[in-house]
Amino acid sequence: MALGRCCRGFSRAFFSCRREEQRDNENKRSTCWCIMVTVGALISVCWLYIWLVIFNDRDDFNTLLFSHLHKHMNYFMVAMIIFALFASYCLLLVLFALVQVVLRENLDLHWIHKALICFGVLLIVAMISAMTLKQPEEWHIVPLSLQYTAPFLQFGAVGALTLLSWLVFQSFNQVQEKSKFLIAASFLILSAFIYLCPLLIHSPCLIDIKEINLTKPDLWGHRGAPMLAPENTMMSFERSATECKVKVFETDVQLSKDGIPFLMHDNKNEFLKRTTNDTQKISCGNQVDISKLQSLNAGKWFIENDPFQTVHLLNKSQRERAETQTIPTLTQLLDLAKLHNISIIFDLYRPENCSNTNDTEDTVKVILDSGINHELIYWLPPQNREYVKKTSSFIQVYNNTKEMSAQNGAHLNVKYSDLSADEIRDLRNGGVKVNMYVVNERWMFSLLWCAGASSVTTNNCQVFSKMEQPDWTMALSVYRTLWISVDAASILIMIAVFVYHRKNKSSHHREESTLLPLMASNLA
Image (cartoon, rainbow, N blue to C red; front, side):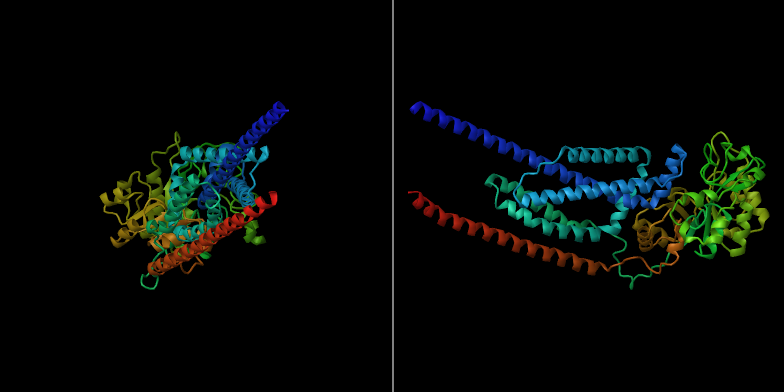
């Protein structure tokens, strides 16, 4: 009998230890999966934010993929939908994990969820790597966007932190003493960063618009108005002039076989394929004469593929006209510019292995023969600039501040991310006109408006032309008051939550201390 009791006691102790060990393993696995879900959600949300701000350059992304896949599609929007679905999925899993924490249940993910999270994170890592290798300049748009969104993101982060404090304080009062220090230290560091990060926020829109006279940047039509008509066609430039009131036509010039400058952006192998019905796979402009080029249709692709999802804005007659557009010559654009007194700026492309050594001379001759006012020509191509200066009085525009300073220039044309707000203001104060390209989203236009840019090159002139002021401005004193008020309100709420959980824990201890003697007496 004694031996049997001893065996049964050993058996209970052994399996009790096994159960305890099993519970510990389950808790560790649950914690790991909670961390994995949280990290996946953070990565997906951050990447979705990045993708949303890169939306400004979606046309470049779609053009790049077309050059490889030779098929029209809104690749950028497809990718955005995928990333948005993954971010939503991860956030739902985080919400489910939080519910499990509240119910004090372990998180046990199905293998499908684990696989989807791993696949999504790997896909994002692959996209980040590809963008870093292929288009590293795109990363510059992220800090630029934070100048616009950071004040509001901080308010949202304070709200999220305040809600999260309920779970943090609940866990703090339930865990063992050795874990409390880790929870408290992590939460305090995170809170300090979120509460104090406005000290790092510098936005050109944090100004008092009543005290500073902000002049709206002029609009330069990027290949005309490519959201309202096929790019680099006469219809596109006409609509940019009449409906957007642009100050400058921005275009791209190449020379045909017979030396006629024509308008076309793409300039590498099969450069006509994206925007025309060319089937001969012509590799560069000087292999074909202008009559052949103008026989191609340069408009149907726009109606059929709707690259900016704006074709629905065109009425029936506009669609019919768009479908019949052809490749225009520079002379046609010069005549339109004279008619509307609008300036012209262009890139002069020399395709590799197809260069025309006289392209600058031929282009200048066509401009001079047109009789246009020289002050309406903004000369951008750096090649043979001295020849251009000798033969004309065109306004010289530069791509970088170094060359502009060396040439005593006063016109600068740079990408939207190349200059800070302070640099733009310093240049403007020095009498330099600063144009930023290519600006397609309202937030970026508003930001550069606040920064003091002279003009912007845009695909979205029909929207920007209707804007009367930046989407938001705020006096710095007002922002600081809001920042301190929001932080103070959050801290007070969290103190109240902490006190509530502390009192709740004390009441549970009192109940347990009262019940234990009663249970002991009943057992006796």
